Image 1 (cartoon, rainbow, N blue to C red):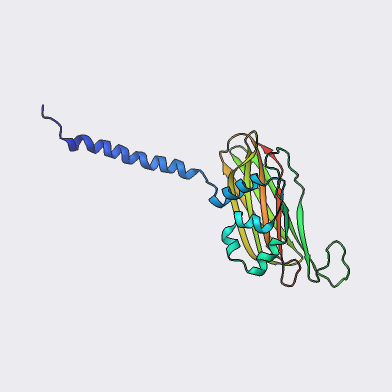
Image 2 (cartoon, one colour):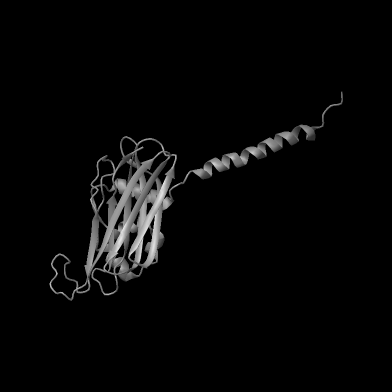
Length: 225
């Protein structure tokens, strides 16, 4: 019997190894990894639970690309918006709708002094639902009574791990001169547990409005998968 050449033995082994590489890569690509900005914001939020911070501090962590391109005037507007960081270690969250208001005259929207004053309202909504094999999460911003120049949303799907909410997926949306913006995504084959959507809603009121910008956060309803 003739001895087999090394090349004859190595070729099948090389082909087998090459066939295994795409299988591993494909398995990894199925998982949607939250961005580093998202992880940075959540880690920072954990450390500042219950504290009152500014919208500027939040956006510097969650949307640094958006933040660095803002004018000094807009940065100042966000630095004047107070935000209470929620408790991410609590299973039960307040889920009511939230809104931000502004007016052309600078008067409070709760006391409409003059019928000529236009009051602008940005309203944040969100929802989470579960069907076999899928968690659906959704967040939207409705603008009234007219389109707003910039409307941004960051929606994060969170899962309760027994002691805190951890992020498993994220969706974003940016719209210009619109009355409505939304994020609507599906998380396929999720792990069993409690799920909720935490969303950030921010953008510009129409020109001449005071304040000129808004920043809202909202928790959705909670579902069991």
